[in-house]
Amino acid sequence: MSALQQAQQTYLDHLAVERGLAANTLSSYRRDLRRYLTHLAGRDIDAPAAIGEADVSAFLVALREGDEEHPPLAANSAARAVVAVRGFHRFLLREGLVTVDAARGVRPPSPPKRLPKAISVQEVEALLAAAGADETPRALRDRALLELLYGSGARISEAVGLDVDDLDVDPAGSGTVRLLGKGSKERVVPVGSYAREAASAYLVRGRPALAASGSGSPALFLNARGGRLSRQSAWTVLKAAAERAGLRRQISPHTLRHSFATHLLDGGADVRVVQELLGHASVTTTQVYTLVTVDRLREVYATSHPRAR
Image 1 (cartoon, rainbow, N blue to C red):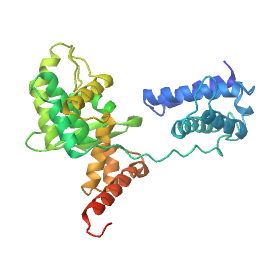
Image 2 (image 1 turned 120 degrees about the horizontal axis):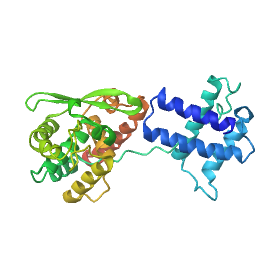
Image 3 (image 1 turned 90 degrees about the horizontal axis):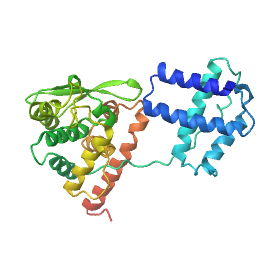
């Protein structure tokens, strides 16, 4: 291994052990840095100290233009790769492997702001009703899963990663769920009455039947073999419910998360409260949802005010 490859591996180990990055995030960093090192090798660079700002800038240009092996990357994908490279160079400087941060002056391209795709409350209700159309153990599980995704704003990975002990519900009172988010950051989110009722029904009448086929998994959501429900299977649950509900637009687990945030803000929730519920590190990430509500205000004004047109 070259000195640069050794430094890259040390950095990835640091991200995994000391920073506790999620497996998917770590995989993205590894892929981006592998491409970066290939780019540097094409410029006859194999040592950290030999990298200059022009080399990093050229990598950003290569990402945007593409080559024979890689298609051009959109701004958000290129920005992710540059963030990985900038983190790598900060690490090199901190570890004393270089004396100058060559990537400090290279800024990631600004991705265009995309409004989150939320669905209406009526569409959410149709989706949830379709998930629990019959009272089989799987139907009870599916209804509880989708109610919890929409009722708590959880990411799909957070929901399928739940254990039974992470959920505290009282059908007649209150409830909370403990979610483990990005960077192993934990947050406790309230659970509404509909999600509490669906979860209680599943725990009493659905989960025991599914658990009978397994070996005592602590997972909240089980598959037909009694093991933990996978992300892919959860996607399938949502897709099937959307089809039964007659929803023509493409629905993803993140659609329910977007809808959770949008409907809260439409109902008057403070953006910082929504930030905490979603587990966003910065309120800037959450503020994109306020653009949706402003559009909604314009729509209501245009259709309701007698002199709006």
